[in-house]
Length: 101
Image (cartoon, rainbow, N blue to C red):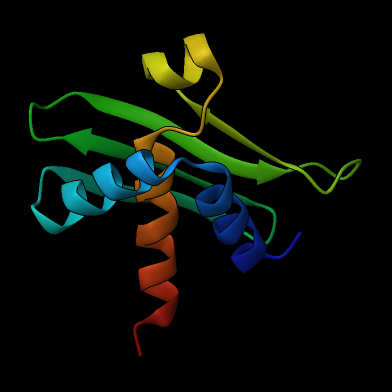
């Protein structure tokens, strides 16, 4: 799966509330993203909240399926299996980096 497809799928699979929370967190500097790996089928990074809490987050696709898989250490992702604001923040930040000239 192409890099941009990972980002689009992550945003598509997140709720509007989650997308809004991630965008506001980035705009207001309440979330800081550090990207550690960028490949055509995988993005990994750390998302840090203003409280200092860090979450290792990744977005990747499998060779066997066109679906994406999102992993994060936060409760929303671990307990509920949802695309969390940390994954959305990672996707938005990675997209912003690719759009910057």
